[in-house]
Image (cartoon, rainbow, N blue to C red):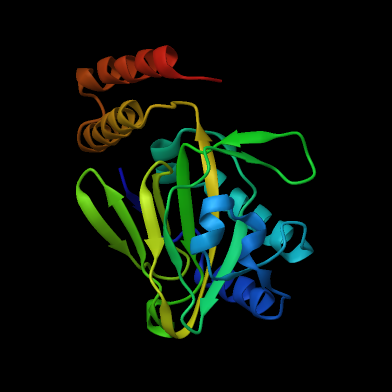
Length: 226
């Protein structure tokens, strides 16, 4: 299940973040790559303990807490602190699968990576290439979103970033541990929640709204890991 979440950040927030990102010190992206990923990865990143990364990561997390589409689709239990990367001059990231478990640097906290997220900070017309290509049950999906928008997809998916041949692609990436571990069950929960919200908007007094809401929460009670 791939979910596009538009306007996670406002244009003003994106501009403010870009000014700080563009003025930051970037390091080799190998610092967060696993053994296999390191062989395929060519990009730059902000260090995990960089004050700019921490501050902007908090901005993203605060925005996601207020985003109903994200909450409905991810059913988040834990969110890995957002990281930031930059591609330019032909840099890319070959096909890989994200690590199943990520440890938060400097802590004993671990996050199971049920979902991967990429939040774009560069406008599509600022660069050529740099598409996030995701292989899922519906085939190959190519993603290049407006600045401030985010893609959410299963972390178990094969994916890669195509070479950036012009300009610079700046983004944040991170992972979510969901209350509902199974991708299929989580997709059913999202579809049901979407249908309930649509029915409630069209006919708030329809008796099925209460009944379906009860079914939703009973399924969540059965599947949730909290």
